[in-house]
Amino acid sequence: MRTTQPQVAVIGAGIAGLTAAGVLRRQGIAVTVYEAGKQIAGLASSFHDTDGFTYDFGAHFLTNRLAAAAGIGAYCRTVKHYGEAVYLGGKTYGYPFGLLQNPRYLVSGLASRLSSRDRTRRYSSAAEWFRASYGRTLANEVALPLLEAWSGAAASDLAASVGEKMHSSVFQTLSLKLASQVSGRAVGSGYSHEVPEHPSVWHVYPKGGLSRLCEALASEVKDAIQLESPVEAILVDNHRVAGIRVRGKEQPASAVISTAPCHILSRLVQGTERLAPLAQLRYRPMTFVNLRLEGRGLLKDTVVWLPEKQFPFFRLTETPLSMPWLAPAGKTLITVDFGCQVGDQIWTMPDEALGELCIEHLQPLIPDGRRRYLGCRVLRTPIAYPVFLNQYEETRRQLEQSTGVEGLYSIGRNGEFSHSLMEDVYWRTRQRAHQILSELPILSSPALVH
Image: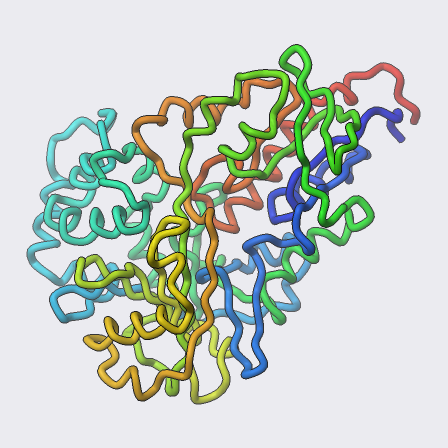
C-alpha cells in the first residue's frame, strides 16, 4: 500500500477518464473521478424511445478487441456489414471500389501516387495535402467539400495535419474491405491508428447500448466517481498542480488528469498563464437528426457522404443496415449530420422543422421519403470534432508534448484535441496513464508502506 499522498483528480467520466482512473487504481494510486453530469459516459451514450428505436451521438462502433479488453465481449453482437458510399451527380459510388471505377478519379489518384513529389515535404494547408495525396479531381470534388462541411472552415485555412491524422493507405483500405467480404464481418478500417488493424479485428455493438462500455470501465473505480461535481478550478502554484476546487471547496491533488476540451481547460487553470493559448482552439458543433422511417435499406450503404452543396448536411447513416436491432422490424433509422454553430439557424431550428428540412432534401435519394416518414429525434452537441486551423497549429503541436504545467495532463479526444475514435482513445489513454504513473511524485516518494 502506498503512502497517503494527495489524490489524483480525474476530470470527466467518459472513456478516457475512466480508463486512466482504472490504470492508476490498479497501481495503488488514490484517484477521484469528477463528473459534471448526472451520469457517466458522456457522448458514449445511447438513448432508447418507447417505439423501439435506439439513438447514438453519431454512428459509434466498438471492435471485438476493445470489447474484450473492457470485459464486455460476451455482451456484444457482431456487426456483419459496414460500408460507405459517396453520392455525386445523382449517382451513388461505393467507397473505395466504386470511386476507383470512375476513370477521372482513378487517373487523378494514380497521377498523385506516381508523382515525384517529396514525401517528407511539409504542406502548408489541408487543401494542399489532400490534393497531393488523392489527386486534384478527387480532392476538389469529394474530399475537400466534405472536409469543409465537417469542419466549418476553408480547407486552405486548415492545417495539413488534419489529413495526416485521418489518413489510411488505399491499399490497406482495400485489403480490409476484401477481408470483410470474405469473413462476413465488418472488419475495422480507419478506426484505429494506435494499434494495428487486421482482419481479426471487427466491429461489434454492446447489447443495451454504448454505455455498457463505460459501465464496465467504471466498475473498478465506482466508489471513486463523484457525479454532478464539476471542477471549478485547477489550482497551480509555481507552474505545478497544487489542487482543485469543487463546489467551492479547495482540496489538494498530486496530479490532475483532464478530459475537458482544451479551451475549457485553459479557463479552469488558475495560477499560471501557460495554458492561455489553448483558449483559441475551436471545436465543431454538430446537430444529428435521427429520422424514423418505414422500411429498410433506403440508402445504398450504411454511410453515404454528400459532398455537393445542394445538400445542407454532409453525411447520412442508416444504422440498421449494420445493426438491425437499433430499429423495430420493418422500420429504419437514418441519422443526418449537420455541421453548425451554437445559436445559428440549424442549432435553433425546432426538431420537427429540422426533420422536414431533411425529408425535403433527401428526395433525390429517397423519393417516397415523406410517405415513409415517422418523425425524428434530434441530438445536439456543442463539441463534436476538433478544428485544425493553421492559425493555432503550433499551439496544438505543443500540447501534444505537454500542457506546460507539471502534474497536469490533458487526455482523451477532447483533451488532446484529437480526431481519435473510441478504439484509439482507449489504447492511447492506457499508454498515457502508464506514462503518468512514472511521473507522479507519489511513486518516487521514499516513504512507502509495503
